[in-house]
Image (cartoon, rainbow, N blue to C red; front, side, top):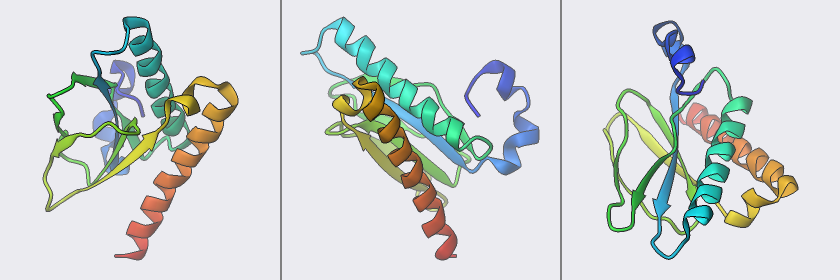
Length: 142
């Protein structure tokens, strides 16, 4: 489920089935040009959408969020037992969340993996499998 008004209107009906928040986070770096940022942000958002499409029904994909360097603190929305952070490799974030009731997993992608169409599909498949592995490990540890 993507964070769109037409889909979120059914949130109360779907809430019991959605246990994972997918949050693409982007770190805005001063040394990059605006077109580079647009391309990188679009690619990261598209990767999140690709993951969500494969996991539809159990995941709520939030819109891409970005912050400038030095402001790497991000408060996670409440109410999810599982958070998946999708980011570019090398970007570091400090996350605020309810540590007693939730787990956070960070998945990293390389820019090269999202710019080439063939590598993009492979990267999204690998990320999808990482999420299902996280769920499987949580189920086995109950």
